Length: 262
Image (tube, rainbow, N blue to C red; front, side, top):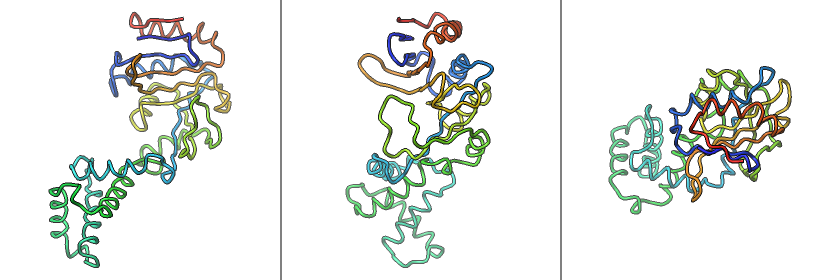
């Protein structure tokens, strides 16, 4: 595991040494807390996306119909299946009563999955792919379950639509970002579980705006020739303070696994 301090922002290249997914939750929560002083807040970002401007929308629609056809879509309440059955009935038997044709719709769905995709009608596939994608994707906080919405809304500090903190280009389909407070380890772990463990957060002095952050942390996965795996980008407003205050905590937390490159 390497901490590159000769780059801006700093990079903590973890690979998969700490694990992947839930196995890293506890350690990453401790890493985040190492940046926070008692008078500061940790504000996590929840991004709302504009569905219509998603540059990957067409590919996602194609993927959705492919995965549904292969019965690989998580659908515990069968709501997606029911919607697809309705589309199939309207396509093959327009004007039919849904309630009177449940057995027929079951047969249509079974037949749909038996026939190769390239033998099915393109318009039908697009309708099904669009429906599955829209029902199985999260663009807005409102698309999430009630527990996630409540968690974010109860901790909401600031909503930004024009502020963009990252070094890469702002995505065209970004609607706004919700910044919510999670200062304790328990709250951070809950945030990972409810929203995403590939997170972005800022450490700010209490009541400061997000753009006036002391630290910006961005946790992501990268694949390349020089590095493969998880990376934590760390932007520090005062790099010397990071070296004096945060770095010793990270060294204790990560121990001999950590190699520092200056």
